Image (tube, rainbow, N blue to C red; front, side, top):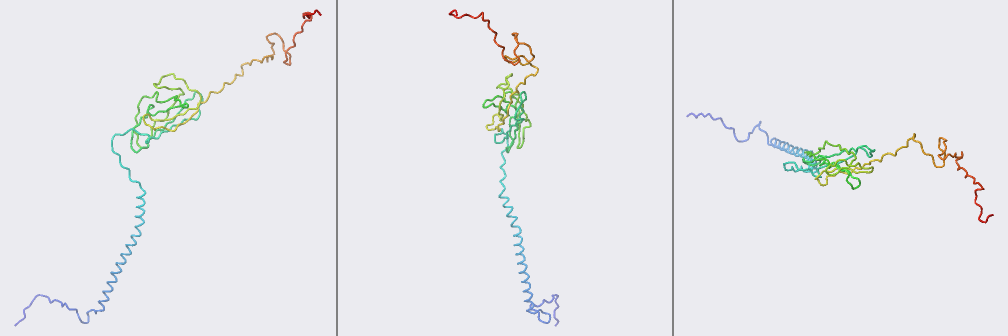
Length: 270
């Protein structure tokens, strides 16, 4: 009776090989110990690398946190809408004079500064009536640019903008409300100028003082003759009006002698 053939390959035995080529138990143990040592070294290396990375990044993170603490929070955006009128807190005003003293007949030149320093655009009247230059003598208002300024000149100013119109001229004449003509000229003395914005409370510059000088004293004309003093001879040697000739030394002439015959006798007839 023949044995039936099969195509299945013979399975290797599950039992450990024995014989000259099989590894010994000690070799297997050594291989496992080497594998465990390599795995432990890899874990330790990863831990050390992580610590190095943390130490390197920590100062950067700390510096970034400190910088964030020092920064102020971003400003809250204001609600959009039409521009509002400028307030005193959003305006910087200044006025200066071209000289500290002015000779007679010289006009006073003033330079004004109007700057917007607020956080959003605003409107301001930059005309002579809105941006007022006022000049005082003590507490008395003697001149104002608003007295003759009528045309409105609205300026939409953003942060840092300045009014380009800076020069104001004063011809030394007084002014009154309504701009009446033919006002008198002020006299010599010390005056104070100040800049303000009409309708904006507190929008006023620091005052600046200047002096209008007195006219110089008249100098005598050397060609004009000077009248001689009383009792002295004229410089040209002419005789006085009464016909008498004064002595050379300037003393008065002696009194005329009286005729004895013309004298009055005493009352007793002596």
